[in-house]
Length: 291
Image (cartoon, rainbow, N blue to C red; front, top):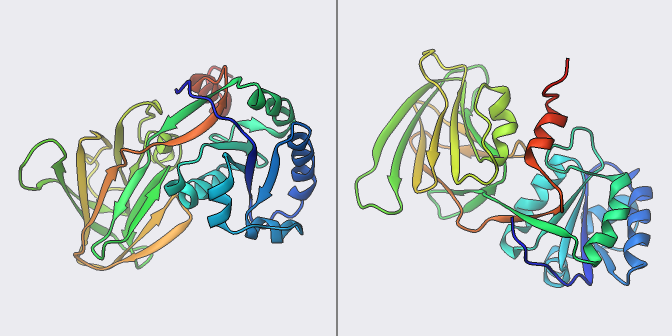
């Protein structure tokens, strides 16, 4: 957690797509911000959905002091990927259902706005996956990526090599996974698809990531946790494939082409209430300790 506090004069909103009924909640939040003299702007797609004036992403990133994702965890994931290069802190407000990441409820958000003004909050830094492709393109994932066969219901043969940031050596074979798919997850994503597939939960402050096979042909293929100093190189053997990023973006992969996956040295910044506790979230959302 960081103790650095911002001077907040402009906030930029991202809203959950295809949810125009959020207009009512947005208007209330906008009014609460404006009571403190804070200007509210909205990115074009969200603005069009709720019928208000919007602004381009480039301008929004340039003039906003913080970003606000109003929706569920999916809205936060999308906001993170779209805004990663501008390094603006994000306040997630849960207008969805589970809200594991976007934990601040709408009924709490109005009170929390005064905490923002009076600097009664903390900034949590979370690791994010950097994905590099053969053609030089890059992408990012806050939760996870999934590699699988392009043809549904067919097994995937996935090769994984490693190399290191702090040592000079040739790429080394980690494993060949034969099964439905392979999940590569951040600590943040450890409570998402990774968890439902039998992978471990990692504390979000850990500098590690997880490889979790889905329905492996060999039952001895188990999840493995790797340190951030290791980069991994993944390819599909014997077939073309797809890469699914945070469950939202799909990219085609060609047989034999490697993608490089690493933990970005630049974290994303999430604004939290002062008493935010990860273990409280686990107990509440996963119903730990209840009958």
